[in-house]
Image (cartoon, rainbow, N blue to C red; front, side, top):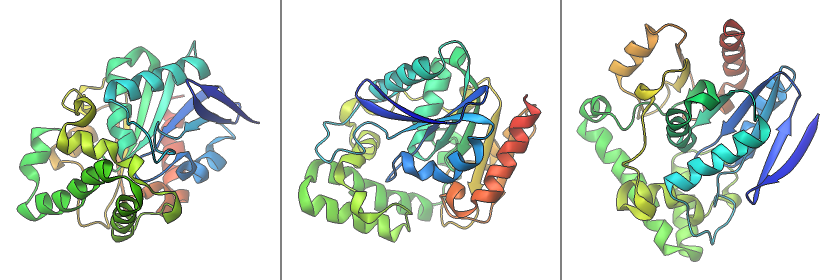
Length: 265
């Protein structure tokens, strides 16, 4: 079963009619379509809910603060699952916004599936980064932050060039500077910045964390992985993939997540 609805001006896509609801949040430079292989797998057992993050489909967007993004997630969750907790499936910036939502609204979240972005705001992550790692992050994230202010063809060209360099899976034609506002928040304090965001260590619900091994950078600390690995109900799994685990290794990822979800039934 497929249905669509508009929630606070956002197009929300719903597939499946299982008893439990999966709410999927993507990151840069993607849209709701990044989850297509997960929807095809999980719609037979779950209700799959997805939408494009605000502004990611609008090159001229004003941008949205962290509190506005979280407020939108809450409205969507209340609309699609008013009486039951949901499971969040998160990737990239979706991890940061989704984890913060789960920390603020724990009564709405049963469990979290996070892909390739973990405790990036923690001291352990910062201390574990090599100088090379810090320079690599700075080298692509700061230019992306600047594209938020550039707008127009030049900004779009730079954003697409960075996406190509990072081997992003998104269609180049869909990438634009409007997607860059989270980086402007992170590096330039735009839209209120990101200092308020909670990290995964603050969550009380079970977490499944998947990450790719085939990357020059890791977005989680070893200390957090070890802690998560010995926490009851949680699971860590590494995949031979890039940052886009759920695309590169869709079958293996879907299977691993299904097995983990079955243990929580």
